[in-house]
Length: 225
Figure 1 (cartoon, rainbow, N blue to C red):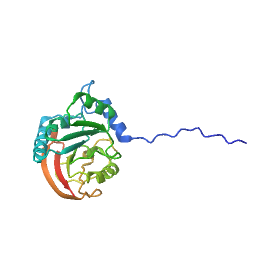
Figure 2: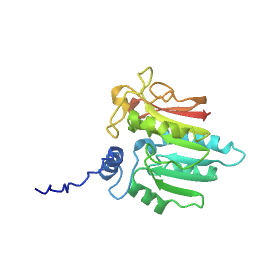
Figure 3: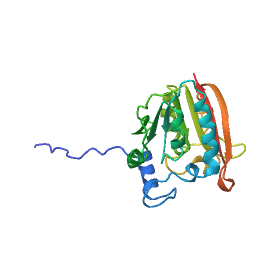
Figure 4: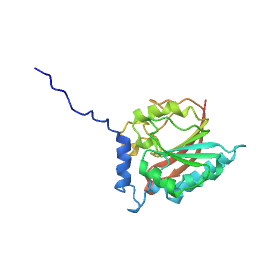
């Protein structure tokens, strides 16, 4: 008897973070108009973005030669657009392809580039400084751990995270895209277990209250080994 061939197609492994982020933008879960992408209040409210733009602009302007900056999780680029003038080259990276294509249409500069990449799994662009602004808070611990070795390719990494105010247990795991750790009274701390990022120096740049007393936004500059 002839054995029947198995014609079952291999099912592509799901890409939960990509799918979750695409859904967030498609369903306007972070707000915004139906006709455009919107990366949420944390990327638009002046009280939250102005202090960040001020301290990061000051840091980038301190270089004798303007640095190459990689914005890992650039979102709708409402924040990044204020920083490109301080750089030799600026690369905006995001996991949502339609968002990247939209950014390419709207934002133009000779030294500005956008790439659609999964920062946890793909090779990242080279640069002097990486920006991670309210990005890690959306990722599982496993994804953060896959990203971490790549951060050592940059001389500086600037991380902003939405964390509880006061003492908290860091790095409680979440499913990517399912809210952030704040709902578990936790937040990302790269220097704490299980990540234990090794840095030459960690320097706080700013602490800003989030709206309605829902935690704080903390920005830290890491000088890498």
